[in-house]
Image 1 (cartoon, rainbow, N blue to C red):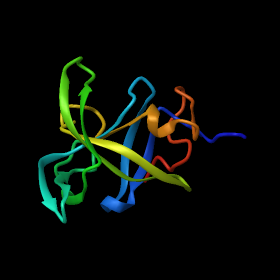
Image 2 (image 1 turned 90 degrees about the horizontal axis):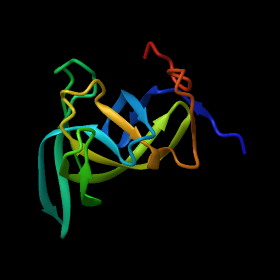
Image 3 (image 1 turned 135 degrees about the vertical axis):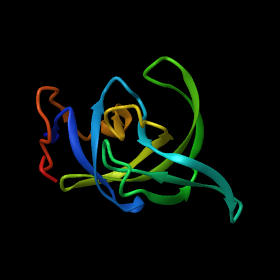
Length: 144
């Protein structure tokens, strides 16, 4: 089976969160995917933990903030790129890249100081896509 090729960065969508486009860095060195989120609160709803958080899908912009609410899938200790361990909420949501779509796990963390508001880790890519690190926006339009 031929797998689609993506570049080191791609435009992706998170339709269940109302995000039509967010530029994601593809990082095969990271196991888990991460989404820039802040004002994160966990509440109980019908006996289940739910996360309420704010996201800003556009890099270098505080505009277009949106508040999202979804069930908490897990809470995990994640080692970040600086080597520090942090406790993060994990959610599951639909990812769309080009015409492809599937559910992924995302950790919620403040990525305000990072170049990309979303990082797509290898667990989300496994058995679905191949990465060409010399290319960008293989499945999506770079002008989106």
